[in-house]
Length: 166
Image (tube, rainbow, N blue to C red; front, side, top):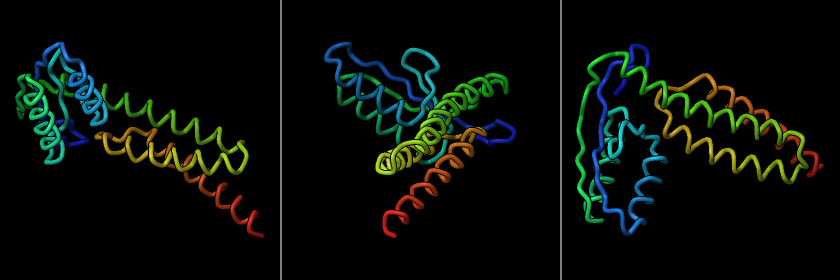
Protein backbone atom coordinates (compact mmCIF):
# COMPACT_ATOMS: atom_id res chain seq x y z
CA UNK A 1 0.00 0.00 0.00
CA UNK A 2 1.09 3.56 -0.62
CA UNK A 3 2.66 5.37 2.30
CA UNK A 4 0.44 8.46 2.41
CA UNK A 5 3.29 10.61 3.70
CA UNK A 6 6.21 9.59 1.52
CA UNK A 7 4.14 8.58 -1.50
CA UNK A 8 6.20 5.43 -2.06
CA UNK A 9 4.62 2.07 -2.45
CA UNK A 10 3.38 -0.67 -4.62
CA UNK A 11 0.61 -0.31 -7.17
CA UNK A 12 -1.62 -2.93 -8.73
CA UNK A 13 -2.08 -2.52 -12.49
CA UNK A 14 -4.71 -3.96 -14.79
CA UNK A 15 -3.88 -4.29 -18.47
CA UNK A 16 -6.81 -5.18 -20.69
CA UNK A 17 -8.12 -5.39 -24.24
CA UNK A 18 -11.77 -5.91 -25.04
CA UNK A 19 -13.47 -6.39 -28.41
CA UNK A 20 -15.32 -3.28 -29.60
CA UNK A 21 -18.58 -5.21 -29.96
CA UNK A 22 -20.62 -5.88 -28.00
CA UNK A 23 -20.10 -2.65 -26.07
CA UNK A 24 -21.82 -3.81 -22.85
CA UNK A 25 -18.68 -5.45 -21.36
CA UNK A 26 -16.62 -2.32 -22.11
CA UNK A 27 -19.20 -0.14 -20.40
CA UNK A 28 -19.47 -2.50 -17.42
CA UNK A 29 -15.68 -2.50 -16.99
CA UNK A 30 -15.52 1.30 -17.28
CA UNK A 31 -18.19 1.66 -14.58
CA UNK A 32 -16.45 -0.83 -12.28
CA UNK A 33 -13.07 0.92 -12.65
CA UNK A 34 -14.70 4.30 -12.01
CA UNK A 35 -16.42 2.92 -8.90
CA UNK A 36 -13.06 1.62 -7.66
CA UNK A 37 -11.36 4.98 -8.27
CA UNK A 38 -8.79 3.49 -10.67
CA UNK A 39 -6.48 5.90 -12.46
CA UNK A 40 -6.32 5.47 -16.25
CA UNK A 41 -2.59 5.52 -17.11
CA UNK A 42 -3.00 4.71 -20.80
CA UNK A 43 -5.50 3.05 -23.10
CA UNK A 44 -6.11 -0.36 -21.54
CA UNK A 45 -3.99 0.30 -18.44
CA UNK A 46 -5.27 1.37 -15.02
CA UNK A 47 -3.66 1.59 -11.58
CA UNK A 48 -4.69 1.50 -7.94
CA UNK A 49 -2.59 1.61 -4.78
CA UNK A 50 -1.87 -2.03 -3.93
CA UNK A 51 -3.61 -3.71 -1.03
CA UNK A 52 -5.50 -6.97 -0.72
CA UNK A 53 -8.85 -5.38 -1.65
CA UNK A 54 -7.66 -3.50 -4.74
CA UNK A 55 -5.69 -6.49 -5.99
CA UNK A 56 -8.71 -8.76 -5.60
CA UNK A 57 -11.00 -6.23 -7.31
CA UNK A 58 -8.68 -5.94 -10.31
CA UNK A 59 -8.29 -9.73 -10.47
CA UNK A 60 -12.08 -10.01 -10.67
CA UNK A 61 -12.15 -7.32 -13.36
CA UNK A 62 -9.50 -9.23 -15.34
CA UNK A 63 -11.58 -12.41 -15.11
CA UNK A 64 -14.64 -10.53 -16.38
CA UNK A 65 -12.63 -9.14 -19.32
CA UNK A 66 -11.52 -12.66 -20.26
CA UNK A 67 -15.09 -13.99 -19.93
CA UNK A 68 -16.16 -11.27 -22.39
CA UNK A 69 -13.62 -12.50 -24.95
CA UNK A 70 -10.86 -10.04 -24.13
CA UNK A 71 -7.42 -10.39 -22.61
CA UNK A 72 -6.27 -9.02 -19.26
CA UNK A 73 -3.48 -9.21 -16.75
CA UNK A 74 -2.89 -7.96 -13.22
CA UNK A 75 0.55 -6.68 -12.25
CA UNK A 76 2.20 -5.38 -9.12
CA UNK A 77 4.62 -2.52 -9.77
CA UNK A 78 6.52 0.37 -8.26
CA UNK A 79 6.88 3.64 -10.18
CA UNK A 80 10.41 4.34 -11.39
CA UNK A 81 10.32 7.86 -9.94
CA UNK A 82 8.67 9.55 -7.01
CA UNK A 83 7.52 12.31 -9.35
CA UNK A 84 5.55 9.86 -11.47
CA UNK A 85 3.92 8.36 -8.41
CA UNK A 86 3.05 11.81 -7.03
CA UNK A 87 1.48 12.72 -10.37
CA UNK A 88 -0.76 9.64 -10.41
CA UNK A 89 -1.65 9.96 -6.72
CA UNK A 90 -2.28 13.69 -7.19
CA UNK A 91 -4.68 13.05 -10.03
CA UNK A 92 -6.59 10.48 -7.96
CA UNK A 93 -6.60 12.82 -4.96
CA UNK A 94 -7.92 15.68 -7.08
CA UNK A 95 -10.78 13.55 -8.38
CA UNK A 96 -11.81 12.56 -4.84
CA UNK A 97 -11.46 16.15 -3.63
CA UNK A 98 -13.92 17.27 -6.31
CA UNK A 99 -16.39 14.59 -5.23
CA UNK A 100 -16.11 15.77 -1.62
CA UNK A 101 -16.67 19.39 -2.70
CA UNK A 102 -19.89 18.31 -4.45
CA UNK A 103 -21.09 16.58 -1.26
CA UNK A 104 -20.21 19.63 0.85
CA UNK A 105 -22.05 21.97 -1.53
CA UNK A 106 -25.17 19.81 -1.64
CA UNK A 107 -25.20 19.36 2.15
CA UNK A 108 -24.94 23.12 2.71
CA UNK A 109 -27.68 23.80 0.18
CA UNK A 110 -29.91 21.24 1.93
CA UNK A 111 -29.71 23.23 5.18
CA UNK A 112 -32.13 25.70 3.53
CA UNK A 113 -34.44 23.03 2.12
CA UNK A 114 -37.79 22.03 3.65
CA UNK A 115 -37.36 19.51 6.51
CA UNK A 116 -38.76 16.53 4.56
CA UNK A 117 -36.36 17.24 1.68
CA UNK A 118 -33.46 17.69 4.09
CA UNK A 119 -33.84 14.14 5.38
CA UNK A 120 -33.95 12.67 1.87
CA UNK A 121 -30.86 14.64 0.84
CA UNK A 122 -29.06 13.55 4.01
CA UNK A 123 -29.70 9.85 3.27
CA UNK A 124 -28.54 10.23 -0.33
CA UNK A 125 -25.41 12.17 0.64
CA UNK A 126 -24.45 9.67 3.34
CA UNK A 127 -24.59 6.87 0.78
CA UNK A 128 -22.62 8.97 -1.69
CA UNK A 129 -20.02 9.73 1.00
CA UNK A 130 -19.56 6.02 1.73
CA UNK A 131 -19.00 5.30 -1.97
CA UNK A 132 -16.43 8.11 -2.29
CA UNK A 133 -14.58 7.08 0.88
CA UNK A 134 -14.21 3.52 -0.46
CA UNK A 135 -12.23 4.83 -3.42
CA UNK A 136 -10.33 7.53 -1.50
CA UNK A 137 -6.75 6.42 -0.97
CA UNK A 138 -5.08 9.73 -0.09
CA UNK A 139 -7.63 11.65 2.01
CA UNK A 140 -7.66 15.23 0.73
CA UNK A 141 -8.64 18.03 3.16
CA UNK A 142 -11.99 18.30 1.38
CA UNK A 143 -12.92 14.97 2.96
CA UNK A 144 -13.08 16.50 6.43
CA UNK A 145 -15.06 19.47 5.07
CA UNK A 146 -17.63 17.08 3.60
CA UNK A 147 -17.85 15.19 6.89
CA UNK A 148 -18.40 18.46 8.75
CA UNK A 149 -21.12 19.52 6.30
CA UNK A 150 -22.87 16.16 6.75
CA UNK A 151 -22.65 16.50 10.56
CA UNK A 152 -24.25 19.95 10.30
CA UNK A 153 -27.00 18.58 8.08
CA UNK A 154 -27.52 15.63 10.46
CA UNK A 155 -27.88 18.01 13.42
CA UNK A 156 -30.40 20.11 11.49
CA UNK A 157 -32.38 17.03 10.41
CA UNK A 158 -32.35 15.71 14.00
CA UNK A 159 -33.57 19.08 15.23
CA UNK A 160 -36.34 19.05 12.60
CA UNK A 161 -37.39 15.57 13.73
CA UNK A 162 -37.54 16.62 17.38
CA UNK A 163 -39.65 19.68 16.50
CA UNK A 164 -42.11 17.52 14.55
CA UNK A 165 -42.45 15.09 17.48
CA UNK A 166 -42.95 17.88 20.05
